[in-house]
Length: 261
Ligand SMILES: NC(=O)c1ccc[n+]([C@@H]2O[C@H](COP(=O)([O-])OP(=O)(O)OC[C@H]3O[C@@H](n4cnc5c(N)ncnc54)[C@H](OP(=O)(O)O)[C@@H]3O)[C@@H](O)[C@H]2O)c1
Image: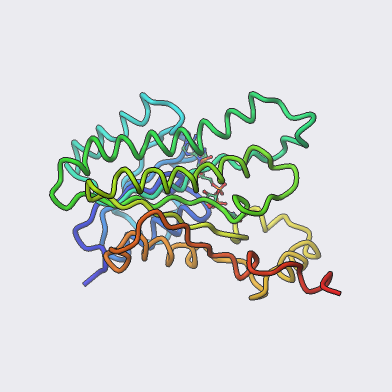
């Protein structure tokens, strides 16, 4: 028996990197999984990768979560096809890379990040609650992905750090309002995760990043999937409004070892 047998799950940004591992985890644990990327091409690429992993049953549909009509269309598909939703994983993120420092960055690009990460995550959650969770006796569970950068900033990522801090606050606010309705909202805050971006990283930089981690390694997508699966399951049934950090101990240290003199 799988942990999520009979459950219907939506993973936003399920088409690459950590999202693929989240989709894989829920699928292998018995769930029927829907996933989206932001475009037709990226979603199709992700669907092909999932098939290559032997996961034939995943249903994919492109959906830019910053676009209300595309979110509605995705939920139309789930309603028509599955008729229910049990677990929403808000994983999609605009990383806000290459914006430069706060003095020169374009405010429109700042808004793009918030529009996806904060407003998009809110819209998908609101739609899941109104279209499904509130109509189901068993209600539903929401898991957001934020970041340890919500608490400790990284350089030249003002919009991203802002958006992840806002997600942490939104998780607590949503949890408070939705708890009486039987809907739980929690969050996993990762640190470094190995993604395709590491494949082009200077090896010295990769080694330096690992030295920055008390556990000496970045997370794999599967490590993050473990935390998300816990928060999505009945094992966490007495938890809501929590931010669970998964960052190899980065947040608990004052300084990394090589500068700790
Ligand atoms: N990687 C890390 O080290 C790290 C650290 C801390 C937290 N996190 C968080 O963990 C999660 C996964 O990280 P990751 O690095 O695996 O993510 P990623 O590689 O940056 O992938 C982001 C995903 O979000 C999707 N996305 C972006 N904008 C979207 C939009 N407007 N509508 C729908 N989908 C959209 C992308 O789809 P497309 O392919 O179509 O662009 C992609 O699937 C994210 O929430 C991230 O912020 C990551």
